[in-house]
Each structure stands twice: as C-alpha cells, then as structure tokens.
Image (cartoon, rainbow, N blue to C red; front, side):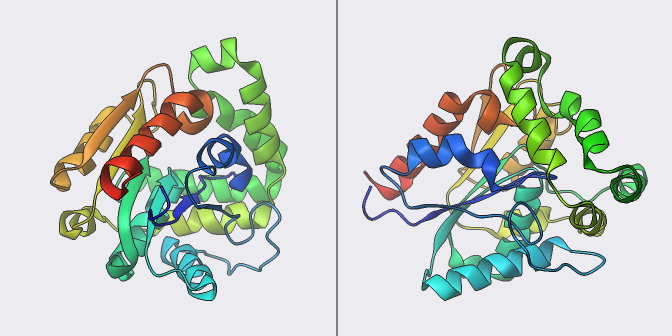
Length: 252
C-alpha cells in the first residue's frame, strides 16, 4: 500500500500511545503509521494550560504534520482521540484523506457529563492516578476481556496509572468544553469508518450509528466481544477493519 496516506493514531483518555502497540506492529509493514503521545501524556514533556481543549490537541497534531511535511492523512481516533480527530476535521478538513472514529461520539457532554469531567479532574489531582485506573478499567473493558484476558486489564491499568494527574485534569476539563461536532461530520467529504464494540457501555451503539448516518458512505463496524477499547480487546478484528478500509479507499 505504497501510495496510501499516513495513518495517524490518536489515543484515548487517560492513556497514551502505548495503547496502539498492536496496531503499530500489525499495520506498519504495509502502512506509514504514526502513533505519538498527546501533549503531557506518556513520555511527552510539553506543558499544558489549566484547561486543554480538544482543538489544542488537534493543533498539536497539525503542527507535527507540518514539521514532517505531511500534507494529507487518515486520522484514527479512539474515544477522546475521536474528539480530537473531529476537532481537526473542523479546522483543517483539506488535510484529511479519510477518518476512522472508534468508540467515540460527536455530541457534547450534557450537564451530568460535564460534572463527571470536573469530578475526574479533581480526583486525579487529589487521589492520584492509581485510584483512577482501578475505577476506570471495569468501564473500559468488557467483562469477557477482563475475565478471559486479564493481561489486557493489567496493561490498561499500568498505562493509566503512569499518567500525570495535572495532564489528566487539564484534558478532562477540556473534554467538558467541546461542542457538538455532528455538523462537522455532515460536511466531511472523505471516506469514513466508524468502529465500536458490541459491549461498549460508555459509547453505546446508537452514538456510533448517529455518526455513521451523518456521513454518506460511512461504514459501521461493530466488533463482537469488545467493550470500549476495541483495539486492545479484539486487535485482530480491529486491525483487519482498518486494513480493509485503507485498501478499499487507497489501494494496495
């Protein structure tokens, strides 16, 4: 797939680019795959403001692409990564060759959602990330994954626990501010793939269906057995879905 645009993988919250290891390994032989830590996450040492909006993370991605001389890409964002991909699409649609939105949604948080983001920010600062990790993992992974593949739960716990509380707090508050970006999707004229998990309780199927319906020609893939972190729970199915999408629209 020599002529395919680069595939940029945008990680979820509160994780880092380490979550994409199965995709980098499987897809790199045929694609140019870029998976980097967002500002403040993982090994990234850049400072964040007190509130880090999704549009600011998107601007960081554009700056990275500009620095590498990359004109057009396929953005693949999971959960918060999807929010960032949509923020990028709003500002720089001409830089998109395609978009893959995984376990995410286009609408803004309601009042309860905003309150939960603020509580997350406070808990990250006051209780630390190990507590956050233990509380989040049951919602991120399906019961089947947690029971049958405990190593995945352990990996996700480790990734969350190593994040900086101030980064998590600033980004949680930034997510609370994001607008409804369904109109952005309705304006997009690029190939689109929507991926979700059969057992995703954080982003249930109707949220994915809304996005798929907004983009003519978009394909919706519901991966069996997976919860919110489809790329880690059923990596073979996830990778195959992405590979087929890239081959269909950008050749072998």
